[in-house]
Length: 321
Length: 219
Image 1 (cartoon, chains in turn brown, cyan):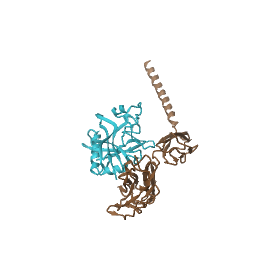
Image 2 (spheres, rainbow over the protein chains, first blue to last red; image 1 turned 90 degrees about the vertical axis):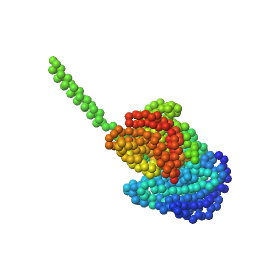
Image 3 (cartoon, rainbow over the protein chains, first blue to last red; image 1 turned 60 degrees about the horizontal axis):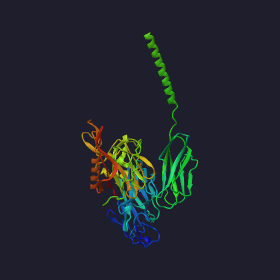
Image 4 (cartoon, each protein chain N blue to C red; image 1 turned 180 degrees about the vertical axis):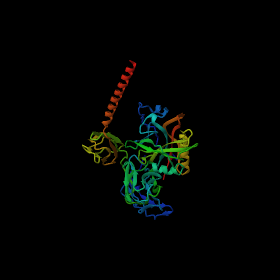
């Protein structure tokens, strides 16, 4: 896949349109060439980007150079920064998504319960899965992800952001930060650093445990120093951080500690590097120690059975005699 | 339109038959009820069957995974779309999918949705949809995606012989109904290595051609 090295000259935001449900926002003048490998929604001409029941999508257009494609040396990401205002109207679900050329790059899923508490979810190759809970009436989402392979092409590209109600009425309004949201070019490979940890670890209260974590380097991104951190809440760890001068082919370490009281405790793991910051969560399941009553009861029951058996045998032998 | 051309699920299938020695891909392709973790690439994996409980065992599989929703899929969104395709009723029985979105394997429980609840003397379609216990998984070919199993239920209420069958038929029906709603589908697009020849095991009737259909649930 060949592409122009002088991509910046071509990575120019161009025409603009924000159209939805019959409404169209005013088109702005095309932005001048920029030296930064980032084109904001505002650069594309959409500086006021809002969605609600009446206007459920925002559309903008930008150009990429001839030969532009996702991968190899150049990668493209999209950052969505938006404040979502909730209706507080009870149960329901909504989805906010961004697509480039019809291919989904961002998708925020919102689910509201009877008390209008909203749980949210989004995921991607930079953030990993992010789950949230909110009791507020509005919430900020700032989320960047790599475009799909088919979401990048040379020439005219179409960015579309959509608000889609799935059930009930969860979202009143979405305000997109048009200066922060946009398309970025990077040389960082999306699959560079990986973090693997068990999803669950079962221990007894007070028992010492060891949580193994594997850090891997994938793809072509240059090796770099990295810091692995564990946020274990009320679980005490001997060390909550490991520093690696380099990741190389892979490193395995173990967080050690003593299990707290019974219950489920999240151990949040994050690998911080100069590139992507993968994250994982291990649930420490602290189970009650086996009850001592049960073996005692079994022994007592066994003794009783033997005694009864002995009495029956004795009587039978008397009758027979 | 060529759908997600780079996806070749199963080609790099990682064999994970619990309680059995690892099998080769060829052997697995010919086996029945052989749970495998298949991949669509990029470090993502999902099992090609759902399970009766959170245990990967050959005799614990429920139905073959036969649908792959991509490019805008999530558990809630797929269910919302399928509500409009006639699958709006609840089911009581939860089953378990297992998947890994690059952060380790996780179980995902779903009761699924049916055409109608509690049938007597007629069948209804039933699907269950899974990710990795989140709303969706993501990679660069499919975007956001989830997988699903399908089958028919008959005589679940009111007497009569209960029967569960027709996974292939419900898969096809969902593809057609969603196509009618503007979501293009690709019948039997890729092998998920879960071929099941037609046979009955109790009231569970297997019939699966081993190829999953793909549905583009674009926005």
